[in-house]
Amino acid sequence: MPSLNGEKAVLFGCSAAARVGGAVFVVASDEERLQQLYYRVDAGISAIWRAFRGYDLRESVLADAASANEKLSGEFPPAWLPREFVADYSRLVRKLFGALPAAQSTATGTEFSEIALRAAECLAENVSPARQAVEFEQACQEDAARILSGDGPVEESAVREIRKRSGAWALEYQRLVRPR
Image (cartoon, one colour):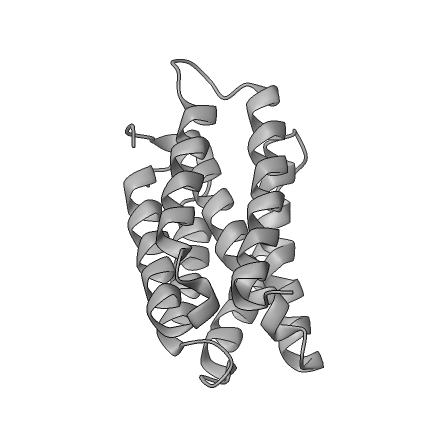
């Protein structure tokens, strides 16, 4: 994976959190309280996506999302998803929120990559339908890095493309934990 820094690393982190969050979402939807916590976390991630499209990043939304992230991580039943997987999702989100503001971020794509790969490894080892999670995550990361590669600032078309792909990848993570 090429080295991603600054805004590109934050976008890479958004993509990773959205992808891995797909598995958390589909399982959290079994219980209203967990589903609401997930939605609050996702609102923070969505706010970051919107900020890359020129909207103001509201600190109150991020603060609420960060609070929900800590609760979700602590309250998620280990029988539903491995505790380590949920903890890695929470780490991704925490790292993402801590990488703001994006223009001054010192986070790297490698930092987000390592957490997401660790989450995928945990999923592959503990959830039988998800045995291909590591290969899938690696392919997603390569594609995301390709979208974000190049010199200069992040182009709006790249933001749209990685956002769209991240949504599709999140659906695939849902299928990994809840195959049809």
